[in-house]
Length: 462
Ligand SMILES: *Cc1c(COP(=O)(O)O)cnc(C)c1O
View 1 (cartoon, rainbow, N blue to C red):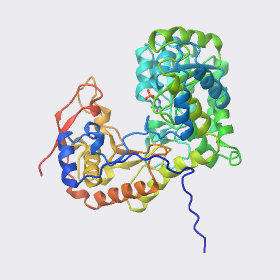
View 2: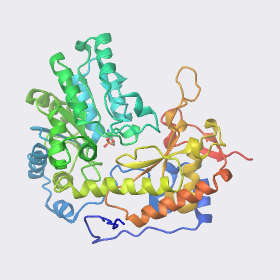
View 3: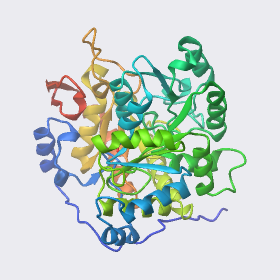
View 4: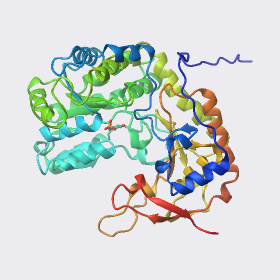
């Protein structure tokens, strides 16, 4: 008989934030008022908020202490220096360009490197990344492996770049039209799926002789490092700190949204090796973000961020607990027989709404309806990632019909306990047991762009 050995979070709770418990009748009314769109709920009406893991982390006592020590000098802030030191030490980049959040860094990078007509390959698009590439006159081309689009494929590195696809893009457009490639670590829209170190190295070795820069989206590089440690031969005995540094060694720079891995509520940066490129970035920074020594963050933001960067890799225990909690929720939901995307990724569990609500056609928005039903059942807030998020085809006016019709349950870092995960899994199982009761939805208001944020719906009568 094997002895059971549980593990728990490597922290204890010093300060708590009360959350409101509500009755089903209250939630029924709240979701109706929100037009059956979880984005339009008031957070006071939410019990367990799994809408996003962006900017929702809990800071440590050390970070809060840093808030009090932030240097608010307009120029030459000591907190900026601390941030530069942390980034150089942990990520390995000598040049730090601070920004208000990830998209600020993407904006600056796109503006300094992309000329109209250029092509930027990447492993599946990210919304703001692609926006800024196109805004600068470039075109995004997806070079992720095919397995990333299949919810049932158990490939261990579903975030990998397909080198044959990349070579074909170079063949078609010529290396001179490709200023850089943007490999995203732990690909968000694929469900938090990692790249392997081998793949990162191959991309680097392929691009260097062609003069194509490698600019990582390293927003979720820590979670990616953890998966490399778990799944890639030769990394079992390396610390995530070492692995993260090696990931970044195969790149010329990176954009980072610090609202994710870095354990702060706001912030981001562009990090570079080339001082000349950094000089050009800073010239734009002062116009769009702020002076080069704060770039849209306050001194205390930078101080808490510098501490968050060191803390995330101080030992492997933090990331083990972070990804472990996501896996824990995934396992509970899976064991209840509910179909989810596998393997479970780094930041959330994705429910397969198409399979769960098989009685609803995709045009009745099964994932939207499932997210609303889950909220009414327990006050757990997830978000739709399916046909509503995919929007309409600009030419035909018809819905884009993505293969993946999902409800995303995203877990904030260090905020909820395993008991909150138990409650969430039990609620998913309860809704699943009553799934035939869930009715489809139709629009009562459909915004022209990014419709998922503000759209309103009503149930379709049986
Ligand atoms: C969140 C995110 C961004 C954008 O960052 P913001 O801080 O929200 O502007 C970019 N890339 C990835 C992979 C992200 O998860």
